[in-house]
Every structure is written in structure tokens, then in C-alpha cells.
Image 1 (cartoon, rainbow, N blue to C red):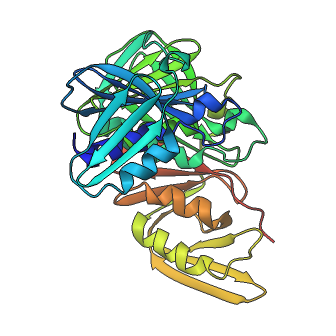
Image 2 (cartoon, rainbow, N blue to C red):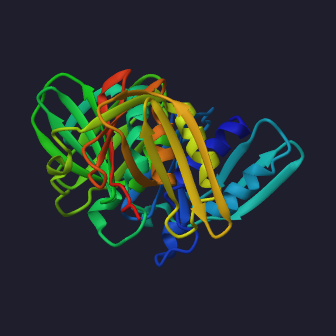
Length: 355
């Protein structure tokens, strides 16, 4: 098979493998050759099966140390690689003038991939990837509250909604799909990030049960345990009225915030937004100095002054192409960010207190 293809499937499956696992067997990669080569890795909760085309002379399976095998394949001198197993205890990797022999483990001891079952939701892989990118940034990375480290998938009659929040910001994306049974599934953000690595053009299918989720594409299968707990009732924090609003080019605003944020306070990372007569001034200050930038915007309603975490602002704006609409319901009330080119997307950020 092609060495490049071998390296890619090892890299994908290896994302689920821990080099220092409390269960030593889980530091291995499971390889199975039939009509193609399958490489499987798991940490117990997350599992990834990656597939690549290969000429299989004799079907079989073997267990090899994942990190070592990946390092060997990365250094192969040739474009093609040959993998030969000698029973279940040894394997040889050859490419060009290089040959490496590796000690193997008994493949029968390795956990098999979780069954792909449950409610199936088929959709375009590129569409799902785009939706995940538009919400995953809002998921929490800290462990202060586990449910915030997940992305909620809400199956509704009219389609699928993806929602993420860390308690200070929120993002959701609606996808229009054929109607099906309603349900809510809390997917670990870690698993969602692995979904992004295997998604691309072409059909993708989500399989959902009460405890597990599986994503099936033409190049891989990613399975994960679902998270326990109830995702917060995010709808109650979305303001139902506004005092004023602005519209601006999302990229221009993001770049202005990024420039000014260089001088923001290191602890709060605060930038101030001052909206006055169709001009938006972006300001920051710290012990090192102060900075400001200004851009013209469309403006509805009275003037407004508020403040946000600069990173929260730039991450919300980064996923919007074209014009962003920001609706304010008060100086310290959550602000809503809408994509003028996609009515199915919404983000929300809680402001910092002024003063």
C-alpha cells in the first residue's frame, strides 16, 4: 500500500490511543487486513476506525504498538510499504531499502469497535463539518461543569440543531433535514473535534442511541460514549427584545478587535465597544497603555456602550462570512450575533461589567 495512506490512517486512529494508558493494551493499534486495511484505536470512550486501500495477499489481524509504528511509518524512505505478520507475535514493515521488525501482541485481547446502531441521520459531510465549526468554539474547555464540555444535538421535526455553551457564551446552528423522531444527545467536544478530522464532501451518517454516537464516512468510523447530565435551558437566556443594533463587516470588526486587544488587560482581556452615530469605536487599556480603532457601521436605535472578552468576540466573528448583525438589549445583558447570510445561526455573548 502507499506509505502516505498508511501514515494517514495511523494518524487518524491514533487520535484515540493514549501512549500511557492505565490499560497497556490500549496503547496498541489494532490492524485488520481484508479487502482493505483497517486501523482501530480506542481509549475506552472514544474509538476510531480508519480505512485505506491496500493489496491484501493474505487476510489477517495483528496488534502493534501505536506510537512506535507511527514513528516508523513517518520515516519510511519509499512511497510504498509492505506489512508482513509472522503469526501474532511479530510483524515486519518494509519500504525501499528499510526493514523494521516489531513485537506484536495478541489481537484477540483488544476490545473490538462498538457496534454501529441506533437512529440514523444522513447528511452531507461538508455541511455537518461547517455546522460543528460554527459552535464548537463556544464549548467549555475547563472541567468546572461537565455538561458545558459537550455539544448538544437536538433532533427536531424540522431538522437538527447543534448547540454549545460555556456559561458565558452560546452558539447554535440549525440544519434543515427530513423530519424524524425527536431527541437530545450530548456529545463530548473532544469527540466532535475528531468528527471534524474525518468529515469532508460526500455523505456522512450519524447513528444515535441513548448511550453512544457513531459517525460513519467513507474513510472512517468514529464512535463515542455520550455525556451524562442535562444541558442547561439555553433558550431562557436569549433576549426577546433589543434596544439597539448594528451591522458591520464581520472580518473588519474581528480585525479591529484583534488589533486593540493587544493592549487589553491580561486578566479580563476586556475590550470596550462604543456605538455612536453610525460609528463603532473599539477600545482597550491596561497598565501597558491603551489603544482604539474605529469603523463605520449601520446603526439602529440609541447609542450603546458595553464591554466583552476580546477572545469571545473574535471567535464568534471568525465563523461569520460577510455581514454580522449584533443586537443589544442593555449594557450588561447578553448580546446576540447573527449572520446576515444565514438565518439559521445565532451566537450570544454575556458582556463584562463596565467601570
